[in-house]
Length: 258
Image (tube, rainbow, N blue to C red; front, side):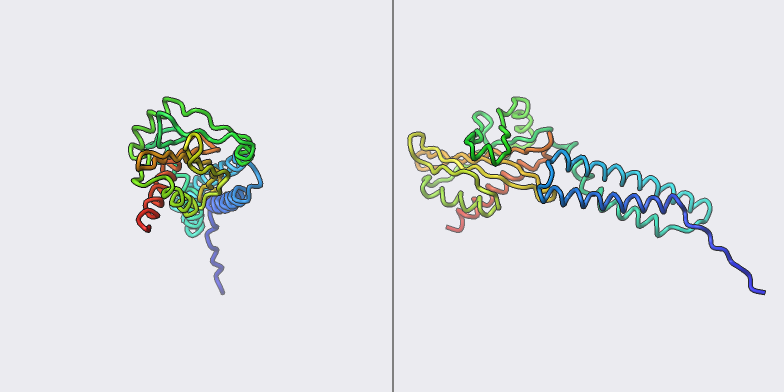
């Protein structure tokens, strides 16, 4: 007579953990697509992404509860638990990295190489339209002091060449960064100061950040000041300082390649 062997059922908590983490990852992909396609504003995108993170965390808790059930009762579902944890890791790794950055970097979203007289963003109709009407005001004194402590290497860029020679190198460095140029004023005229207004997009979410470059001719030199400001969020997680550093590196590469 054949004996019927009944297999232990799969842990229900593990199954729901995998379902929730799968849904959370799909929701995050949708938020990313909406953001990069500029279909909705940053606030809506962050709300959707935040919901995905919350659901993923709930899925992790259920998966861990499932692991406890499996350990105690011998039910099946180890693979389901591991799949849930893997999917959650894919989603939560980058937000986790940002959380670490938030603890070690100051709360600011506007960085300038000149903290005494930061470059102003252009207020022309074209520049304002590129920023959806946003006007970046003066950098608060508390932010300036926080920047001095956190990013002491973000300093004015001095080139030992005239502005006529420096100008094409600056434009090439901007192009190398992939920034979208909004407005250009060549050095010269009554003030002698040149300006470039540009927009950059963050690598992952594709949020638009604003950059303004001030080019000031000196005797046998050119001083370049860069200001980078985020449109979304109060914390830039070091993105603006990093953007200025990379521009300075590209400009040095253009200078070395002459």
